[in-house]
Length: 243
Image 1: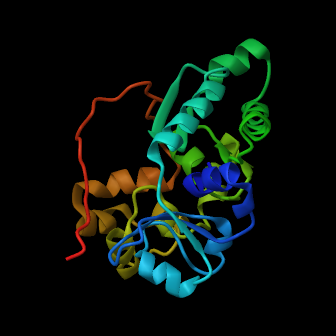
Image 2: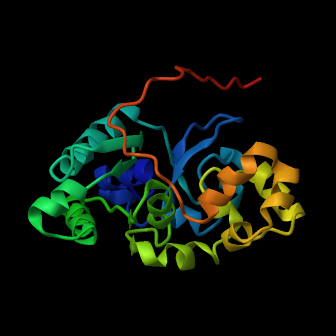
């Protein structure tokens, strides 16, 4: 989903549409939960300190999060997904993997068509926009889903996986955070293609047993199935104190 929390707020409050909007607390140490695309143009993004976001976009409206509402809309989105696949793996309130292989085989259609139908249903029934990535596996679909945001669709056929991934910055590889990105940069690895073609023996010296894993991802190899349910690994609650 595109800027999910902020988009739900703008949909529910039409007077806020087209305006910079930040979802989050207003305390001195508050953090942005979501930023509308109007606010993002000024450099405000989710996970940023609210004070910093308001420095960049002082005209932004700040609204408190309504997680019960977002969960309700998320269930409505999941209902749309379930029309096309029972192999559904949510990874957040606003993001899921779907395996539509069986549906496409039964209906003699292509996955790209299903993605278009889903996005159209979300727009017509929920007045929200969604971006989708269609690819042979979860890794490439995840990267593709963010390629043309907002309201975008990116289809990566199997024979185009390498060409699609190669020019992308290494930080676009799912799982590469700031620390890992810096480590790759120190090795001269700037793009996913750089990593895919890097000498495996040299990479093993630097990354140990993780080297083959990262190179498989860089080549677009991912055999993980879409899992309907996963065991809960943790339950947490956070509270940020003013002092």
